[in-house]
Image (tube, rainbow, N blue to C red):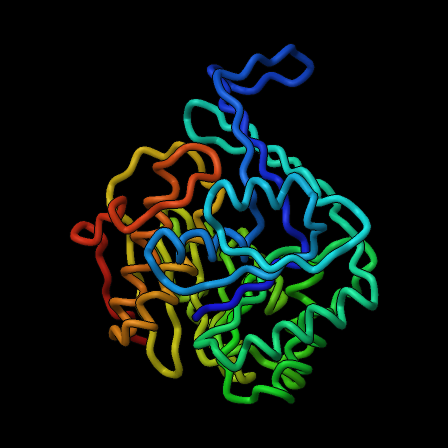
Amino acid sequence: MILTLTPNPSIDATMQLTDPLQRGQVIRPAAISQVAGGKGVNVTHALTLAGRRTLAVVPADEDDPFIALARQADIPIHAVPVTEGVRMNTTLTEPDGTTTKINGPGATITDDAEAEIIRILTTLGTQCSWLVLAGSLPPGVPTDWYTRVLSTVRRSLPGLPVAVDTSDEAIMALGEGLETAAPNLLKPNGLELGQLVGVDGEELESAAADGDLRPVVDAARKIITRGVEEVLVTLGASGAVLVIENRAWHATPPPVEVKSTVGAGDSSLAGYLMARADSLPADQCLVRAVAYGAAATALPGTTIPSPGHLNLTDTRVRELHS
């Protein structure tokens, strides 16, 4: 089983626009949808659609509308009660695939809720092949919270592989604490990789778009030298790079008409973990990750792909040599 923790889950509302977004104007979307979301929740959703055993741990009260949405989608959820409601995230999707996100702040995790989360992770972790810590942190939680959780889980379950996917202050704090607690797998995008190593992430993504992947690989190797075993860097239309020890691969996505980029990175992580669970070679794990991410972009809103959406044949991979 793959266990995910989303400390800041969300109700994801997506509005599909018929025309380019115009600030200050009245907007009438062609369609509006609401789904249970958040990075770890999306990973669990993708795993569930693929028939894999998984469970998403989230702070949410049982009568929160988020829980009803999760159950409607058959997403397996373990809720840790909190007093505030799950936040609302709103996504505006333009006809050309341009995506604008407005994310709410989220509910506070109390000391009691944090203790219960740790208890659940250490109890259920004994049955798991991976633990995924994913998403932003809610208000009031210290920026090094992922390092704290990872350290605590590692003391109880030292052999449990852990993947982390986060951003901004949370990923920078995680980077500062790698010597204390390094996850087995990190899944940043180009901007987040820059935050991790203190370089301009936009320049990393720009270089990758121009075909120069060396800056991304060099930045990922800095993380590898500090204890992380695998770095999966998602790069949007440029595909993704996987760095493990002294080897690196680059995969490019199949042709796709982009409808929404929401959930693409989460789908990539789910695809990668499924391939790892199937004991595929590293390059084929990367292929699965990129195929999943591309499939997500071809679907509207926060729609999560299933295996039938994948185009593995046209997903290309090559090893990068120094």
